[in-house]
Image (cartoon, rainbow, N blue to C red; front, top):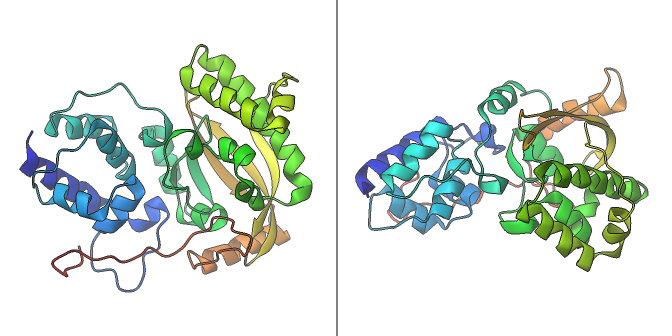
Length: 301
């Protein structure tokens, strides 16, 4: 394990990522060219102390799971991800799926160019892999969890707080669309244990999901008209578009509104509001400014 080179590589990749690339506010007091250590740690679901040890080349022994999470947080491309595993002396796994996957390069390139409209990359199970600042402000950042709970579809049927994103009158529509989309994904993946496990858990936990699943409606969600509840701007009516990767495992979503509509004006206001803490009273997840924890030596990096 080449810990010194691993530390250098992590620092170089961290310096390359702009806060807006991962939906974080720049802030007036930022003194680093890229992300702070605590921001990378939070994006990867690691403790700040643990990540700091990795960047200092100490005796930390990163697991394959931690490396995959770091690859996702730092938006490493395929060769960079493999290099990270080589430096840590870990077997290079096949291309990852789920919330620890790296965003496919074609979708990354498009996301980087969508800076005037909310946009994010998700998996076919609706796990957020990357989002721009406007998407974070509109939809909130994804929770730092792994497993089925990383999927918005799973949370939709198991966590009432997830439904606060949409008006109650629209819940039945979204439930039906989510299940029909999951039916199509399950068929395309074939004998996939991840999808089968999610479906089995949802059928057991939620009667609405079980009833809709037994209807066998199948339809990938490509375009949808959505009403999104924002704590500061109210209900925003937008069109949601999807662009699928070649293998269908990832999707680029972006949100638009026709010029001259109230939704278009609200999107303009959204860019002004940015990442202010707009936590809704009903507990809906929203974007908040990052917590500044600082390094043990008192120097911000």
